[in-house]
Structure formats: C-alpha cells, structure tokens
Length: 499
Ligand code: FAD
Image (cartoon, rainbow, N blue to C red; front, side, top):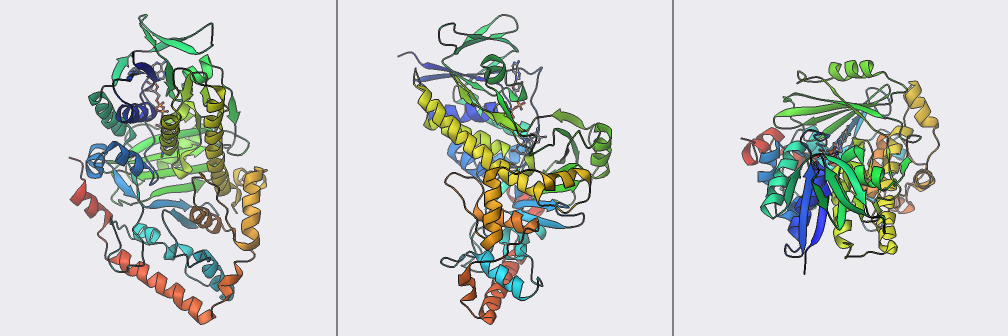
C-alpha cells in the first residue's frame, strides 16, 4: 500500500506540534509526513503562557517535563493575576485547581458567599482558599501531593516557556521520527479541477509538494484554508475589539513569579510572562482607542527590566474560520482563528485541534458529515472561550471610554444566560467539552465584582459558627501548606535550570 501523504504547511508552534503528534501516533509505514516552512518568513514568535492541559500533550509524546523546561527556558505557572480589571489598583487571580473543597452537593463558593453576606463583605478573599493562589502570591512551587494535609489536592500547574525553543524541540522530535522538513516559500496552492481539493503546494523555485491531506499552519496568512479554499472568517471584533499587540522581551525578572500577570490599561491590557532567561511582555490594545506610539510608550513604561530590543507590532482580527476543515484542508493554530492571549488558550486550541483531527483522521475519501462534526466541535470550543474572555471586559468599573463601551456592549446569548444564572443563585453551568471549569468562572465572576444575589440554600443548613470554622480551617491549612513549599526560583534551579 502506498502511504498517505500528509503535508503540513507552516512550521510555527502549531506546525511542529502537529508534526510531532502525527509522527508519534500514526504508523510510519502508512503515512508520509512533510512540513513546509520558510525561514525567510519566520514565525509569530509569541505564545509563552499555557494552561495545565499542555502537560497532557507533552506526556502523550513522552517528553520528560524537566528536560522540556530546560530546553525551553520554562518556568511554572499556577494561574493568572488580573490587575486593574475592575478598577485601577484592584487585583484578583484566576488560579488553576480548586478553591476550597466541595462537600456533597455544595460548591465551596456557596459557603463563602453565605459568610460574606453575614459579615457584610468582611471576609478573607476567595483566593485565600485556593492553594494555587496562595502559593503563587508567596512565590512558591511544589509538585505532587500536599505535604501537610491529606484533604488538600496537589496543585495543578502549567508552564511559561519560549515558544520558539518549544517549536525547535518538537522539530527535533518529529524529524527523529521520520517527518521530512521542506524549506521554501509557498508561492501558490494548486487545486484539483474535479474536487476542488488542494492537490499541491508550489514553492519558489518551482518544486511541488503533493498531498492527500493538508494541515494549514501558515499562521494569520491562512494560505490554504483562507486564500485557496475561501473559508470565510467570523469576525468577533464587536465583542473583543482589541486588534493590535506589541511584544517585547525584557531582562530576566528578579521577581520570578509562578504566574502570568495581565494588567488592564486605558484601552486593553499588558502581559508579563517570566521565563528563566528573560521576561516576555506585550501590550494588547484597541487601535480605535490608542495610537501605536502611545501603546509602545505605555508598554515600555511598565516593564520591570530593561527592554531587549524594540517592540514588535502584531495586527489581528479576533474571530475564527467558519469552517476550520474544508475539503482536504484542516486549519490549525492562527490559521484557524485567534483570540487574544488573556487566558493563554491558543496553544491549547492547537492541542485540541490535533486530538480532534487524530480521532477523526480522514481516510482516502472523507464525507461532509465528518467535516461538519469536526467544525461543530471546534466552533463550540471557540465560542465558550470567547464568552469567558468577554466576561473579563464586560464586568468592569473603569472610567475610560474603552471600558465604558465594554460595559455597555451587547453580550452573546450564551454568556448572558451564564451571567443571569450566576446572579440569581450563584450557579455556573458547564457543558460537556467546555474548557473552563465552574471554578474558573467563579473566580473571574467574583474577581470582576459580579456578586450574586443568592446562594445554594443548603449552605444555610449548618450553624453560622460551624460554617465560619470550616472556612477558617480551610484557610489555615492552605496557608500552612504554601508556607512549607520551596521558592519558585529555587525549585526551578533544583529541577530544571536551563544550561
Ligand atoms: P506562526 O507562528 O505565524 O507560524 C506560521 C508558519 O507558517 C511559519 O513557519 C511561517 O514561516 C509559515 N509560512 C507562512 N507563510 C508561508 C509561506 N508562504 N510559505 C512557507 N511557509 C509559510 N498562545 C498561547 O498559548 N499563549 C500565549 O501567551 C500567547 N500569546 C500570544 C500573543 C500574541 C500577541 C499573539 C498574536 C499570539 C499569542 N499566542 C499565544 C498564540 C500563539 O502565538 C500561536 O497560537 C502559536 O504560536 C501558533 O502559531 P502558528 O504556528 O499558527 O503561526
């Protein structure tokens, strides 16, 4: 049997993640995998903060965690701090993992809301009941089960890493397993007159790369899915109006925090991602509200180390392809769509696209029903993440025109429903395959100051003293556990220092 030809167009993080996963999971005698990329064009070169699911991807490939961190200058990430999102000076964290502990039917936040109501708001912050947040704020890190109390969970964590080094690591992995890298600029895409499918890529110099299945990882250019196949783009600017970013690294931070920071400013926000060898920074903004020069000045004035180079401009339109799989082309990464990195979801979306594609891998011919199902699942995933991002903007009490507009903006029905349900009695619904958990929504809702009118009636079943005692015990256990953890920088130095 002749092997099926898979061609991956583009070698950014997305292209090499696809190549590594395909090389690992597909039988080598049945598939020939080639990746075409152009050094002259280069990659987007940002994408440094992740969510815990990235561990599953690395583990599936069999990558050793410490070796991966050493190779990518990586650090640990326990959550994201949102500074100034309600109003300047205020901050909260969306930390990974649990907040408190569920007991039976009762989510922990109901107990906390009861105590808050009884004490007129004079209660420890919700984050004091999250082991991840308390550890993150104290700059601490540990892996594995809790050391001081069996009832505390292990801390889930993600990574900050250098995306270019990650792509390089995956390239070595993929090439060692038979993926062929083809250097060259794609100058045109040939389609079959009969089916309309892509038949081959033509490179400068005239070489042709033919295939059966094409994975479009050409970034914002979307050469195959957009330009060649004409899949249209769903523009979400009305909900998420930021359309530009400037990225600049700065010298390694002395404050080596195990969390990403997202600081709101007058017309968007700024990220800070500490790596071992440098700090990644960038500003995301709405060009209708802030000029490029003012954005650059704002970014450079808020670095905590010297800038290493000039800020690099990036333009984008938030949204997604209406069809991420069309004909024999599947778009993965920026070619499939983009949402700003507020909750570090892009590399995760690459990962889920790979998993979905591997599960639904087409045979030599694939029917529309399979493509439709793939696209339906991808739409659902994108839309729910979009709703979560919109919430951060909508629930604000800032004065600037940008923020006032966000507060007044129309919401998608799905988000409006979620907020209404929360406001009534503190319920959060999560549908199957939705990325963000109830506890993620709860942290952002409360963090953004959306306090519900009620809570679950079972929270009133205990005496006030018992509820208070339970909360206090939880808070103390978490504080004690975090206090015995090593410092994050010492932990990195011991286990995974880049050489
Ligand atoms: P790219 O990196 O742009 O790669 C495109 C590839 O296609 C390159 O190899 C290029 O050479 C090739 N190519 C293009 N045209 C041609 C051609 N004609 N011929 C040959 N080759 C071609 N994600 C996160 O998970 N966390 C973050 O913190 C995060 N921050 C971000 C911040 C910003 C401002 C932006 C814009 C994105 C961020 N992302 C983040 C997203 C992340 O960067 C991308 O999802 C990820 O890097 C994948 O990019 P890509 O591989 O799809 O595209």
